Image (cartoon, rainbow, N blue to C red; front, side, top):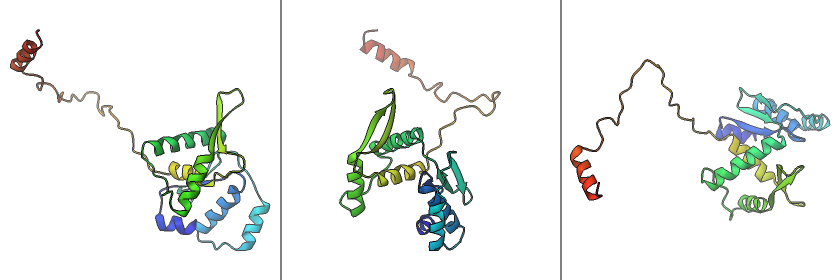
Length: 184
């Protein structure tokens, strides 16, 4: 992961902190800060599996974000991923490649399940299937830069801007022709 982050230099990298993700996030923080990771570090981290309940933890100047995935957050990320894939804002791996085959297989077994009162949903792989590449994809998609919304508010309320459409309407002669053509 450290090599990939240093090669691609993403603005933000999200790392899941649930379960085994917590010690891996800590190891990644240390590695990005230049500390060499040894096997003893991994053994210690496995013993200290600590699950934090706040959503984000940042490191490496805010570029690395450990994220605790709740059901609501997972639902939002999966539905955003689904929309981005459907509308062509995100492409999946080529299904003829090794990892593309795995991703396609996991996508085909990923399911939405109604829980509790029937109003809530959760997403996961079918029993006996995996969803690791789906999780990686929605975390990567969360880190994708998004266009900023346009701001149409005036900076100065006293400032009068000319109407760009004023005076560009249909001329009287063309209006007469339109009215005559349609019997007005």
